[in-house]
Amino acid sequence: MPSLTVIVQLGLVFAVFVLLMLSSAVMVYAERKIAAFIQQREGPNRVGPAGLLQPFADVIKLMFKEELRPGGADAVLFLMAPIISATAAFAAFAVVPFGAETTFFGLLDQPIKLQVADVNVAVLVVFAITSMSVYGIVLAGWSSNSKYSLLGGLRSASQMISYELPYGLALASVLVLANSLSLTDIVNRQDGYWFGFIPRWFVFVQPVGFLIYMIAGVAETNRAPFDFPEAEQELVAGYHTEYSSMAFAMFFLAEYINMVTVSAVATDLFLGGWHGPFLPASLGWIWFLIKISALLFFYIWMRWTLPRYRYDQLMQFGWKILLPLAVLNLLATAAGVMLLGA
Amino acid sequence: MGLELSFFYVFAAIAVVASALVIGQRRPVYSVMLLIASFAALAGLYILLDSPFVAVIQIIIYAGAILVLFLFVVMLLNAPTEAGPWERLAAGPRRSGIVLGAVLAVELGWALWHVPMTREPVGAGASGQTIESVRTIGQVLYTDYAFAFEVTSLLILVAMVGAVVLAKRHV
Image (cartoon, chains in turn red, green):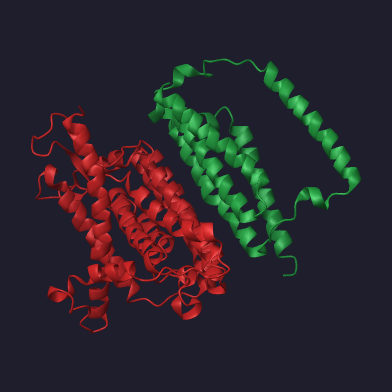
């Protein structure tokens, strides 16, 4: 007879999975609506009230589309690539905590953590899984046997390797500050206020780190203005040119879930996670949602405001500006922690 | 059989089979993918040894960074399916290859036979301190092994400079 805690834990796993799926539906709607407002259009407004059912119509359309595979494609890898992408996207969220310990209003004897798996090297696990997600894109590009796809795949490989370094160094500077690798510990370090009104969020100590993390995060999720693996004006649709139906939908899903994960990790690392004024600790996840939504809005806002970089500019910026800046930031943080004693 | 032991056998089997298939594979891209599977299984074994840090680093460095470069090169060269190495070889190298292979097999067998099969893992007392493992590794790396660490980083720097010089010869 499994105890109630085990059942609640399993329910939590299921809930996170469903919520991530739903978040991508919400993101699709939000993206199209916000894009429409930025371009002075109406956006989806036919399916359901205010077009709210549009994402579901999209999913149904994708499901009933024909699954196509180009003749010279490598069958096994062509099938595996979207699965790798989607799995990596879901897996990364498993170690992200999104609320304080709770007993669900006294339902449980032992409080449980609002987190699928509490790993004490959580930050590195997120980093490891994100670094694996490049394989989905690269293999999709290679196995499609199409020049657009191959170029998209190659670009994504070099782009993600280049921006992984500043991304990792930005993470490291937070680790130095927090003196821990566990995301829960890092969030709890940011509880409280300086001078009574400035929240103790790491973004105020690490503004450069936050900036580097966000820029590298955009590059890692292949979003505009760094959407070179797709770059529709140059590469048709890049790595997923040859994909259709649900295989394409999986790439789509992976992209949105990756955005959610990057925003969630940014919230935990820099924006104080579920800590915030006015709400009791048990409702901290509302703060978490608000912070994530703000970051996601920022993502969409940026995509529809900024034009795409040139590819050589992307590489120049990554290696000659962002990486040295990240190294300097880490050194400065370490020196600061040594001198001021954290 | 304990859960941990069965996990060990699963990971070990994946690691061994995938590694064997890496060599047996004629298509280079598949070799790279199988190598990733092998590294992932190895990371699983590190977790069973109570060192999640080493496991995660294994994934980040090897599976996440180095093999992406491998895949990048394989894709750029667009290497076709290799002809079997056996068919390409002349009679002379074949014969010496058989002899050398046999010698290596005997050596490996001898080594395996004489290795002490201890059941206790080395430094077993340190298990359970997983939270501290990162700190311990860092401290040991920068004190006891500082020289080896610095020399390795110097070697990598030399290799990097060498690669840049080779690539930019005509500038």
